[in-house]
Length: 328
Image (cartoon, rainbow, N blue to C red; front, side):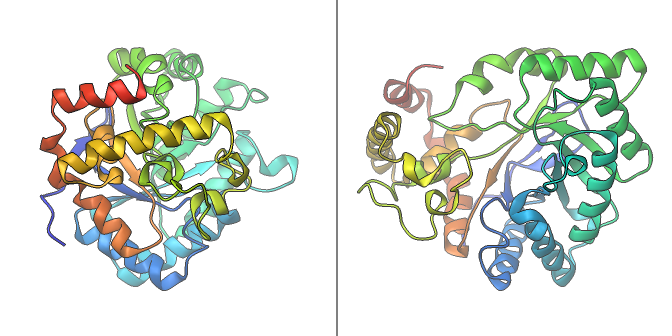
């Protein structure tokens, strides 16, 4: 694989530098075979990727087990990579869900055991929890940091106001605030990142680890004929935001139409639609890292090769893209 050197970016106001591209495990690890998962980790690491994303809810913890086994087998030096997990959906019982102190502490211990690591570099509150006081959430994360089990904590799919509240509570109590947010962000899903979160970037230098840069495969072209390939994100995500039965909705049809127009731009630039979509995300200065998902090594290699095409995304190309998907 011929790629330009991996770019590294500071994670918001922290001193941590993560690769501009990272590897996630949602709807992949625990569903693909373990050998392929290991090869994906190896390919990513050898290309310069130093951040691997996971969550307790992914395949009910199996995703973390697969990643932990791969990390053990590959034996990367622990100070050369970052690994994350997320807490919210740990099981069906009331004490296994949400962001209570009990669940946060127990979920972290379980994630460490499954991932076979002594600490998590990043730990995310996977969703906001209106049933738990913000002070309890902030204090719990602070305890984990003080114990050395977590280095940085953040949020995922929280609103601007919720993140601002967490930062304010941390400031009032002299505790460590969230350092990063993990929002969905892609050419078809822009408003939250480009409108709602902007004050947090400007006022608090919040970092972002964005997910779904390819809109669950819509921005790869695999759904252009209206069919759902077996094993694809739509096929697997029956209980996720992009469900298989949503391809025939008006919104889905509009998005597929936009994706086809975007492919025309990508073709003119000599790159794939997926590479154009990832490169566009990387052009946002508030994106710390773009989380890639892959089921095949060749797919991951193609996405990593996006780095070779970044210079092609000129202001003129960005303007063409805005004409297709709408202005920011």
